[in-house]
Image 1: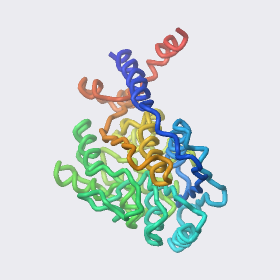
Image 2: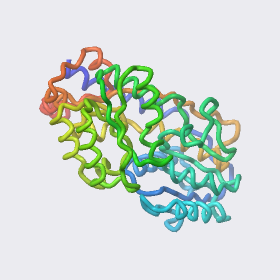
Image 3: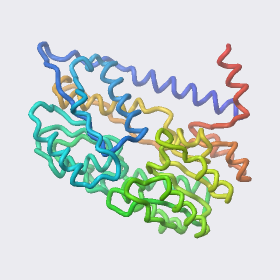
Image 4: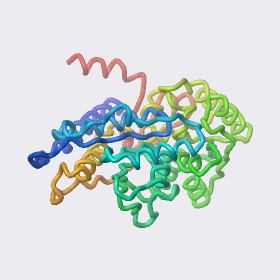
Length: 358
């Protein structure tokens, strides 16, 4: 069973790559000039870097990267935990710069700052915003925002995620942490968690006392406070203290598991392969890269107006760590194994090694 599951994941990825190859985009019109693209993030986060690389790779696959320049002086990252006035000042500078043809905006704080200083002309390509509707970036029903905003919006995405987690591994008390600000509530998906808790009948145990930078120390305090409240499940959102590129959240995860708490990660694969029980599968970011690259090409007039753009449908998929499941004494239902997109299990290591040698 486990061998078949691993093979299915590999084949699925190959099929996805074939679908993405598709027909080539038309070449830009003769004489198309090089466009200047700025990059804006509130602070560094591992997924921002990964998604940016995927967008650039998609532009390169379609021979458009040579028409795009991304100068270092227009790559803005003030740092997490700064005063909002600093983010607004950087957004204003980009919006007032006549050399900027388009801005790639990573995350909620950067996007809301740009919209607050919006000149109504420069395209804002907003990527990796946890809850665009909850943050007031788009209309919840239509998905529409500012006329110059480009964003991938999935209605009820995080409602689906929390419902999926509760259905897969039922729990009674779900712990969640956040910095108590509109942005903190948004990228920790708190409003959706509250809604699903009401509908499905579990208790949401909230810790909203994280510091603005979501430091490791404040997260440690939060984890302990939630354990003291008797949680039996914990949701890992896009918190800086769980960013493996900035630190090591393993001690917090181990403390949760030692107390029998089931862990679920929003950004699943990177966490699950390191020991978190379950999460959303993030095995392939290429479709997201393609989505944004196409729209960047269109916004910069590098793709003809009549060229159809891909409409990528979101389908949440699960990744699971069987070693952690055994350590927690869980009996994973067969239907969950069959429906999982990725399965991590150290007992597969020798089988995987044998396949790679062939």
